[in-house]
Image (tube, rainbow, N blue to C red; front, top):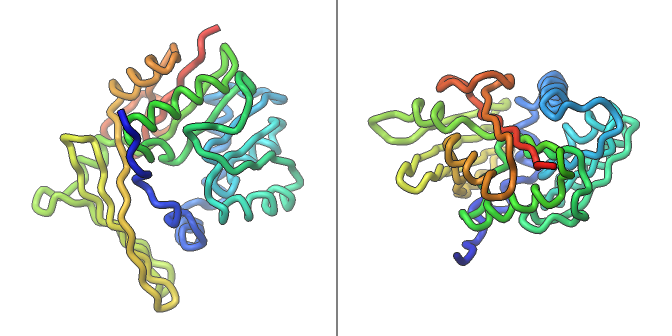
Length: 255
């Protein structure tokens, strides 16, 4: 299978992303996410952890503060410029690197645990997504865990208007706003989003596509990549419900 171009443009992850999403990604939310990741990965201090993609390092630096040795990989230069500054301000060290998730710039079996958080899976075509899972299997040590956090597709589809077949979402920050209009392609398992930003009187629009997976499909993909003991959970790591906004998958590389 030939690889298609990236379905999510790099310019989606820039200063405007941080400007709007910091309304949701508050310090309290970041602390809660880091604590959940630590619980799901069974961290006890001293583990080597990979955060891929790491974004601007909101979880990387918290896991480092908790005693982990953390490597963060991302392709956004905006995020990678900010992440070390935030880590230094928090008094921790994180090894941040630029890289492609499909060819991670790290050695084999280098990590005790890997996190892929905040709907950062599904950026590529099916071949690219499968390649990323194989890379996760390559870089995690036998007995190590991987956690993947994505939107629960059942909850998103349940929210789509039957009249328009789209899910609109608007976020206001003062006079600025971000508008997402998402259409669901059930046949191909795709969310097509028209993403519009208005900030300081300037408006720009881009489109991106995210591949979504139901639990059985993602479990099968992880098994094909070599993982075992694959478990799917809901918002807080419990049983997945249709109403849960997130779907968290925990997988282990066999010893």
